[in-house]
Length: 467
Image (cartoon, rainbow, N blue to C red; front, top):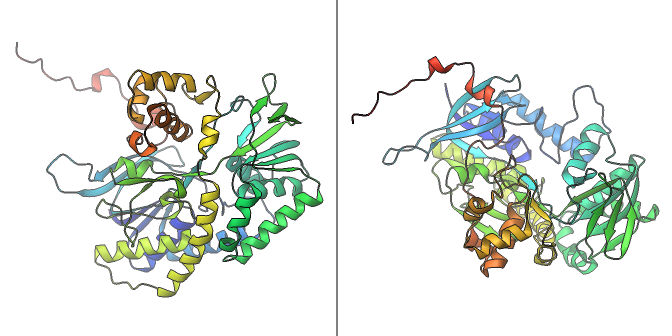
């Protein structure tokens, strides 16, 4: 069976898109890597785990309930590793149905097809490298959020929380609420930057009130908040014991750090959709029209994977993408004008936070020469600059010269920093050095799960070529 619409990613945009598409009469399948849909912000608690209700959980539960009622096919716990169809056909052939290959939650591989594909792939975390960032005890803010929200586990007993954006204060407040100690909050943004963002935050008084509550909790607990600062080193013998911030040193057994979010564009890059580099949106994003269409026919995108705007804006964008896909496939559907205004308000607030989390060139320039940039392959800043001097002019050439970005994460952790360092070394823009070509597998999967059982007698051997 060929589905009408496949949705890749089960965050708020993906859940809303699948729900809308199913209501429109389409045969819909939603594929999500986590055990349950929800994404990072609306992450569901594991089975049997009873978490304290909060606004995020209630919003996520409402989206999950609406999706369940539609009867749309939901495949969770599956890792999509291969993409095909669409424009990925032999030259001269017409576009084919989209093909998605995945490893199911039961470990069994499967492939499905769809006439249209909506990408709701979200983001991954940006961490600008610094000395000691690979030490055990240093984790991303997103990882800390998973521990705190989904498992109720503290990332450490005494924690430094560092980076940029509102997630800093959310994580710090949750650590305190869970009985942990926060040694310091190290915010790359200045107080002036936060003040300038207040008018946009006022468009979402619920979020503004929540942020004020987080700051008040830190103040009441006498947690030092260092504005316009950054971690200069994580120190310790084999494990983290201290965090250095300029001349100050904080004893800590955990450092939760994150410098913003980067749109996850592996799938749209694999399908060779047009992209643009927009730092204010998080970096490289697919180019969309006003109805969420990419440059590839019947390929759509929504949510933070198209530009960081936050969980509140994502459902409206997902619904819009679904309505557009339905229309393009010939289903009868209508727009909801009242939702456009809600989307605009949410996007305004999200845009202000995205600017706060944009890549900061000064942090890139402060990286010492021997600091590891690509932790998968052990590539340092010095090695990247040596490659630039030897002639590497694009991120793909840098990959060939140094193996930077060739590990299991495929450049998700190092790509932005490597691109910024290469552009600086070459004296060109980040847009000029480009981004790595999207390739499969999108995620690491066991070879045995893809190949199955065979021996050499099963391999067809072609006849020898005539001499």
